[in-house]
Length: 278
Ligand SMILES: Nc1ncnc2c1ncn2[C@@H]1O[C@H](COP(=O)(O)OP(=O)(O)OP(=O)(O)O)[C@@H](O)[C@H]1O
Image (tube, rainbow, N blue to C red; front, side, top):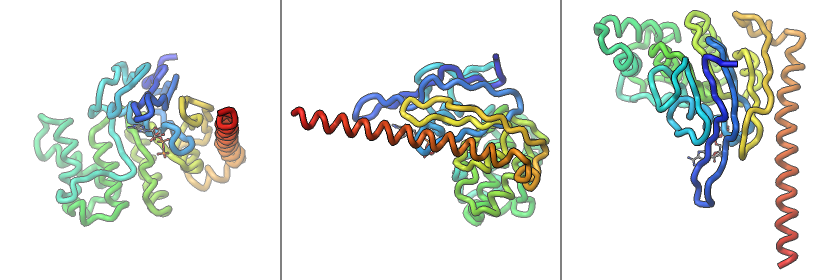
């Protein structure tokens, strides 16, 4: 079935000193317009590799990606990206950092119009009174808010979030999760987010895509998240199925762990046999 976003037979092979390493193979995923999908999997399985290919920042080795009927060929303002650390220009104000993106997307807008857009999104993320502060004067949480405002101000077709709350304390993380959902409830942008946090995935997303362990990682299992929107954290946690979902996801990750351990043991055994024969 065609989707607003289509990743088809997606593959990534990196050149390494030991030869080509196939990290992602035959990764297939369709997303509908406005859908929020979380990508979850063990560290190093290839989540950032997939997301960076969608962002156009990492060349695709096999297959392809279509966003809103356009095949991805490189980065573009139709995809807003937020990384764990927001990569701001430290000497520039919060406003000017957001304006960098806005100027790119609205080259013909007046200066006042563009400043209004930047100020609007900075206010939505709670930085209305810090517009003129330099990025270097902002806390990590505030910097991440600027990064989120900058991504939204591009009015992207798709939002790509690579562990955007990973470096924040739990209170700031919860606050920003809620702010993000609130903005998305107005702007309805198709979102792909990487997280290591099962609870975060359940709170934020419509579907959770579990990746298999690499190498040759692909989609292992997909969970539909049935909780009503707008999401209220306490209601989500109190939902009668919440802990079953959580247990199923953790179960999948544990299964992947066991597979990896078995594979490693088999490799070790094979290496021992070779050594004995020689
Ligand atoms: N440029 C590169 N060249 C060679 N190997 C790479 C390159 N980038 C990533 N890799 C390898 O690809 C694999 C997947 O990396 P990736 O960062 O996509 O995983 P991840 O699931 O996002 O990890 P984490 O959860 O720890 O951030 C890892 O083994 C990594 O070492």
